[in-house]
Image (cartoon, rainbow, N blue to C red):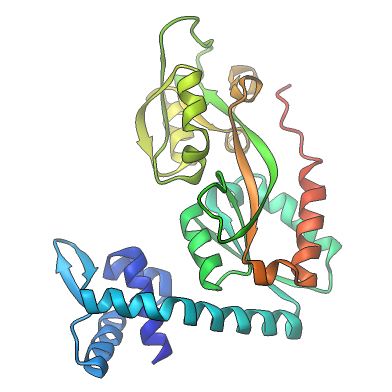
Length: 289
């Protein structure tokens, strides 16, 4: 029964059978069977199709509202017990971090905590936050402002400068007048929500929005337009730094933060991981040579 309820929660979060099956690592038919089992048990329709997406019925919404905090507390209890018994840390990481400078930092942190085991999972920031809330991840290392996440314990670890990769790597400068059109991340990104006001202040206009900073960078390198990305992404793709415009010098940064549920934040393993990660990140040099 619990796995069926978990499936309903995943479907409520994702909105499609395919995305729910991907998140749960089961087949779409298994998702359908679990939901059908719940509907038989409660003798109520819990979902309804709306185009290509799936919505909860009123009964489905009521059930999700009731079970979400209960399942979250259960996961939290099991995570804490597993941590105490095995010394395992389950970490959700924003994909742009885990695809750039993250692995180098994490391997150094692991060297300082040899008694622990680590499990990393790459997702978009909103997914990382949802899974930290649900208890699936013990901690998250993600981007963006914590203004809307007051239910979680959150600490900014470092501010990573944003840069502009010129279209086709041809040298440019920020214009003294008018606006500079760029390709950059879309609204759903935690990073965009944290610095969109600063983007306006710098007279930068988003012309194209993509779901991945690495896609933005590759489009800029190929010549489709100027790309605005974190400096770690540009460095990972070995973009010549003399071609970059460092927006960090103008105050445009993306916050990188550590998040956890308040009940797990004080666990010794979590506290040790946080301290070691913070110390390592302060040693990162984001200055452009």
